Amino acid sequence: MKNDFKGNKQALPHKLCAVCGRTMTWCKAWAKNWADVLDCSDACRARKNKSGAAA
Image (cartoon, rainbow, N blue to C red; front, side, top):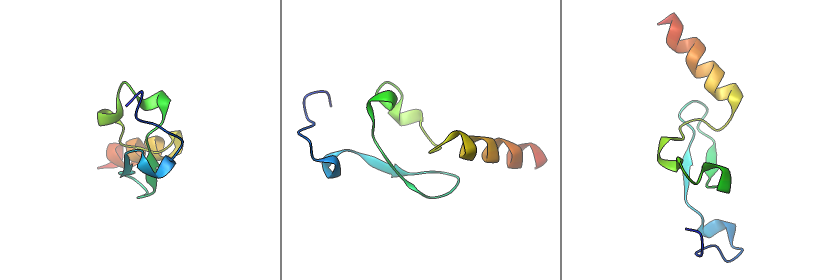
């Protein structure tokens, strides 16, 4: 992935947030754990944990 990026963000991998359904595009911060990234933001992570605790 390191040398594949040529400035075209459409070529980057993307997936949907498990909580809100927004599209998440790969970024360097997620390079080491892209397979484990499920939520697009801290807000979605908190919402998921809150709803999971109630069930």
